[in-house]
Image 1 (cartoon, rainbow, N blue to C red):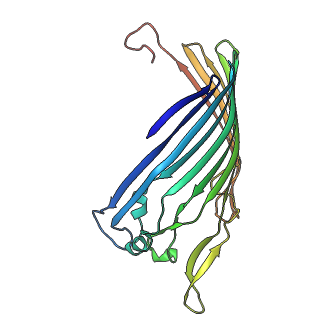
Image 2 (cartoon, rainbow, N blue to C red; image 1 turned 30 degrees about the vertical axis):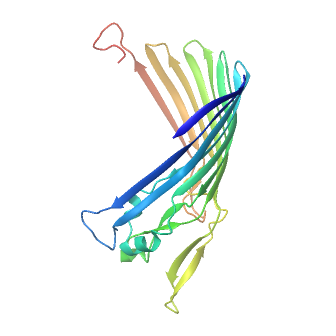
Image 3 (tube, one colour; image 1 turned 180 degrees about the vertical axis):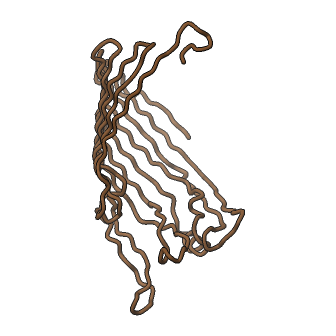
Length: 272
């Protein structure tokens, strides 16, 4: 990892650098069953993962920021939780997952209020998905398949208002639109010809699973250094359960409350 900071002009600062990674992982199962677990080696080798960030101080209490980063996810033990045949067929073509993240935002801090507004764009490539092999009743091990890329665009806003001594109100909202960029091609046995055929699963343009589009959180807090507590609420909109977006999980709202007391004047209980 190499990083530097360049103060271009008094209000404008640039942070830039890059990361390099090489991760070798070897699967050596203690109990080896070639139908459900595999042996072998995988290497994640990324020599240049750039990172950059700009900060522009608008005034003493606010700034504009922009960031870009490229990251990679190393292969892990889950890549060996497949049959030996599946592993051998994909080990030379399987690529590590990568992401390119762009962010632009504005943050500020005034005496009784602080907040941030930001928009972002993320592109995920070489997504790996565990796919079922054969009929579930056969009990075959799953396989790892490269199912293409995902695009995420979103907006987030958060702020804290210190409206009274010892009291504060926090609120945040996030919107995220994440979609699959391509269809997934699977294989199946044709019931008539008994031949192996390609089956196209129409995931292109579909919303990613378990990804709510709207997240909202609010929290009222009190803290006088002795008594503290908060009352919170979080909301999550509905999200899809299937890759083809035909089944959803309902939205949910959760309330929570906390009340506490800090002891003072005793070495044994100080801060507890």
